[in-house]
Length: 325
Length: 225
Image 1 (tube, chains in turn orange, green):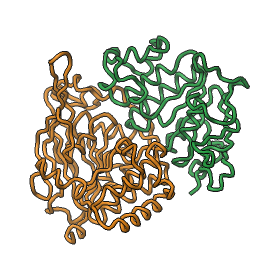
Image 2 (tube, helix red, strand yellow; image 1 turned 135 degrees about the vertical axis):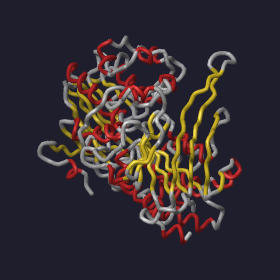
Image 3 (cartoon, chains in turn red, green; image 1 turned 135 degrees about the horizontal axis):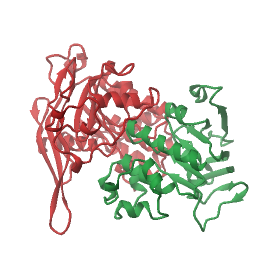
Image 4 (spheres, chains in turn red, orange; image 1 turned 60 degrees about the vertical axis):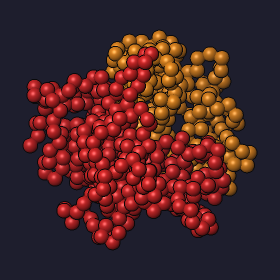
C-alpha cells in the first residue's frame, strides 16, 4: 500500500498498472427471429491501463457500450455475452473466480443507474450493506458521516429509493463506494443530474480516492467532468478507443489533441466553440471494416476505409489514426 | 402567448413541501433556462407544467385559460432518458408517428435517417433516440416545450446538433422553451434568460424564483456558493 501511495504521475514509468486490459472485445448473442441468432459487437480491441494514484476517464457517448467495460471487469455480464482479450489485476490474470472474489471488496463499482438500488430497502441499510460485516455501530456512524458530508439529511437514510431526487440518489450511490475499502474504483456515469456544487464535491472525492492510492476509472459521457479531475482521458467511440490523451492536451483549439474526433468533441463544448460536425456515430451494422471514424473524418485517405488503424503512441498519448504522426 | 404557473406548491407529504408558492412564466418564442440545486424540485415543476403531475396546489394556464386534459397538450415534456419515454416493443416509426405524422421537414432538421425508422429502440443510441422523442413532440399544435436535462446524457457533438435543430424549429413555429440544465455554459449559449429555483429551506417558508437578465448578470453570480 505504501508503495502505491508514493506513486504519482511522474514516477509512474516502469511501475506496474493495477489493472491492465488488453484487446478486449465483447459481443452479445441475440435471437432475431425464431431460433436464429445474431452476434452484436459492442466493444472491439479495447486496451487500457489503470494506475494506482490516478484517475483515468473513459469518455464516450451514452449507449455506446462503455458501461459494459465496467461490467466486464467485475464479471457481471449477462450469460449471452462473449468476452475475449485479457485482463490482469496486480499482475495476475483476472479469472471469473478472481473477479467474484474481488468485487465489492478490492474492486468497487459505483453504478450508473439508480435502478441498481433495491426499491424495497431503506437507503441507509443499502449503503451499509455494501461493506464488510463489522461492528454495526461503527458502520452506522460512518454512514451518518458520509451522508452529512454529502448533505443528505438523516431522514434520507430512512427513505426508500423512489422518494429520492435524481441528485440525491446519485449521492447515495457514491456513498456506497466510500463505505468500502476498495483499491480499484470504477465509477459508471456518476455525475448526471448533479448540480454544480454536488458535482464538484463528487469529483473531489474521486480525486481524493486516487490520492489515497486507489486507481479510479471514471466512465462518463461528460468530458467536462472528466477534465476537472482526470490524469488521462481515453476517448471511446463506436466500440473502441480512438485516443488516450493527457489532461494538459485539452486546451485552446485542441491543437495538441491527436485524433480529429477528439478535437471535434473539444470544439463542440459550450464553453468552447459550440460547433458540431456532421453525421452520427456508426451503429454496428454500419461499420465496414475500416476506421470507425471514416464517414465523419476530415483528414481521411483511401487507405482508411480498408482496415482499422492500430493504436500507436504519439507525444505521450495513444491514437488510433493512420494520418497523424 | 404565455404559459404561466402560479403559486405552485407540491409535496409528497403534507409537512414536507418540495415546491412552495413558485411562480414561473414562459412566453412564445422565449428560451428560458431553469437552474437549481439537486432536489430543489425542477423536475417536479416540469411535470406539473406539462400536466403529468396532477396533485398540486396553484394553477397552470396558457393565456389565463386552464389547459384541457382531454386533447393534445400544447405543453410537451421531454425527459432526460429517452429510452424510458418510448415503448421498447414498438418500432421507431410507430413511436414517432403515434401522436401525429411527423413532417419530413422536422425529420430533416433533426438529421433523422430513413434507415433508423425500421429499428427497435434498443438498437439506437441515446442521442439518436432523443431526436425521435423531440421530433414527435414538436407537432404543429405544440406551443411550449419543457426540456428537462435532455442533452445531459449525450456527447458534446450530438448536444450541439440537437440544440441547433430545436432552436431552429422553435423559432419557425414560435415555440417557447424551458431549458432545465445544470450546465451553465450550455444555458449561456442557448437561453435568452435564466431563472434560479432555490431549494426550499428547512423552515419551509418560501421558494423564490430570481429573474436575472443574461445580459446584465453573469450566470456564475446567480448560483449562490
